[in-house]
Figure (cartoon, one colour):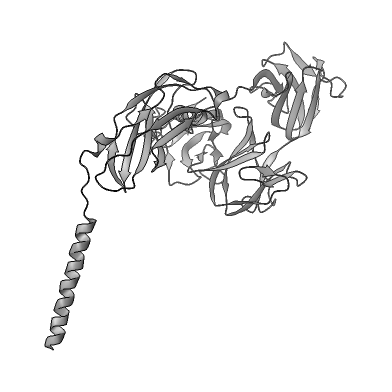
Length: 438
């Protein structure tokens, strides 16, 4: 028994010894002045004017020396950028890892400046700083430095003065004419439109001073000519002002697959043309499954996954995870993207769909804005009643307006008088979102 007790005692002493050694070896003392041992160095001190043709060139290069933490450390760094008038509560944060430098391309820096609210073609001061962490502990938070940036607009202007009018388009001018856009060929314009059975003409500046019809239904434009008969459908209309001809083609680009409509049991999800980026876009809820893009709800022309981020007519199905996405397709280079988003906003109420008996009237992003804060809903017809704005056709997050002051809150239903309206939702200030009605 005595031998057993002595052995246990010895084991306890040894264990204590190991623990003590382990504590001593693990104990480190952080340099209390570590923040003073490094700083953010900005190579460019003159104002920076960003140009779209230099997108891939380095516009800003930053470095910093390895801080003295007082022990061997593997830190991680972040660069934070905000408007000089901001307080960094909404700063753009760039994860650096353990590197000691960060270069920004023109495209990257331009995107950051626009996302912060800097105005295109106007010089703006941005504040920039470095943060360093060990684990989750912030040990370095450098002084602010200022850079002067003039960003460029990433929004294309493909607008023209020409449009489509008619009983098939806008009830002969009850709403603005459907727009034509410029193409890469001067004098050749294009419109992507959905028409109903009826007639159309082409005119300039939403007035009858300069208009075209087609007297012989032969594809030739005639000044002041006869109305052009069309059947309901989605079309690409090309107007050539150089030789006074036009062409109307069936055209729709949509999503088909197990992730949306069980490979065509219902119509494909149609993307719409975004003239601000010369791409086709849509905001859609997808399921776990697979999808492809195809033209005109038909398999004659279909696109699957080619190389990463690009489509190919011989490509395979595109795998999807259930969620809500901004879908973008560029038919110029066949690039595409699926960008997850948290909310798809909709209008619901007795004034529209009897509080959800049919789908909500869904807003879409305002593609003319560089940020994702502005949502629009055009030409929705309401009846006398009430409505609210809600996310994802559910009541988890919804807005009313207690004061009827244009500020969305967790408030009362918004009254509506019968008519056709357009709405703008503005989430620039997420704590005080607003809406306007036209």
